[in-house]
Image (cartoon, helix red, strand yellow):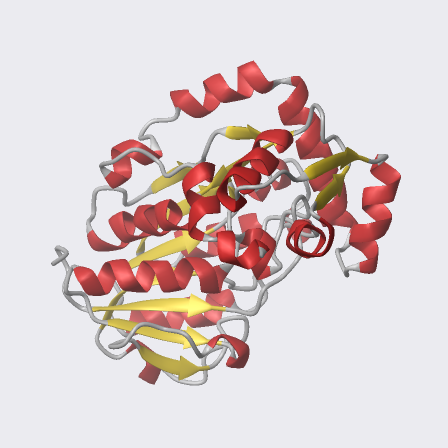
Length: 310
C-alpha cells in the first residue's frame, strides 16, 4: 500500500485529437488496476462515454473535470488526484475545492506543450496554464510530460500518425503514411505511463518535479514491422506525400494544429534521431528509474493488441 492510503481520484475525459492530448481513459484504466493491486481505493470522475470498462472495485462517478466541480462531495476521503483532461478556464475552482477538502497531492497528466508555450503570452497558454494553476493551489504537485502513448491509435487521441493503420491493415494489409521511410516518433506504453503516475501519486518522492515520461523515438517502418510480426504476415508499407496524409487526417476530424505537430515531429525525430535518442536516455529520473523495471516495447504492445488489427 502507498504511503498515503486515502482514496486516489482519477479524472477522465472523452478522447481528443488536439495536440498533446493523451488518452485519459486508456491510461486511467491501467492506472486504476495498478493502484488496486497495491491496496489503494480508487474513485473515478469520468465523462459519460468513459464510465464503462473499469476494474471491479473502482467507484465511478459521472461528471467532467473540464467543468467546475459542483461540490466537494467527489473529493471526500481523497488524498491524491490524477488530474487528466482539465481545462485552464475551470481548473482553479476545482483546485480550490480540492485544497479545502484536504487533498494532499495533485499529479497532472500534462504534455510537452509548456516547453513551447512559455515563450508565448500567458493568455495563449493551455497546458502551461493548468500547470501554473496547480503550482499555485497550495497542494503538493507533480507534472508528467509524456511521449505519445502507443495505444493512441485505437483511442482516437494525438498523434495522428498510425491513426488510419488499424482500418487499412484489416481491410487491405497496407499502411499509407507520410515520412514512412525516414520518420520517427517517440512512444511510451500505456502501462509504463500509468506506472509513472502511480509512483507520483503514492509517494512524496516526486513532489515539485516535472517527470519526463518519455519513450525512445521509434522509426515508422519499425512500428509497421512490429505489427506485421505480431500478425504473422506481411504488411505493405506505402509512403505518400505529406499533403496526402494531411488530407486523410483532416477528413478523419484531426485539427490542423495536431496535424502540423505530428508531421513536424515525424520529420524532427527522423532528422535528429541520434541527438533526441541521447536526450531521452539522459533524462533523470528515467522512466525505468521511476517504475523499477525496463520499459515495455512496441513489439510487446503489438503482440498484446494484435486482435485489434485482424
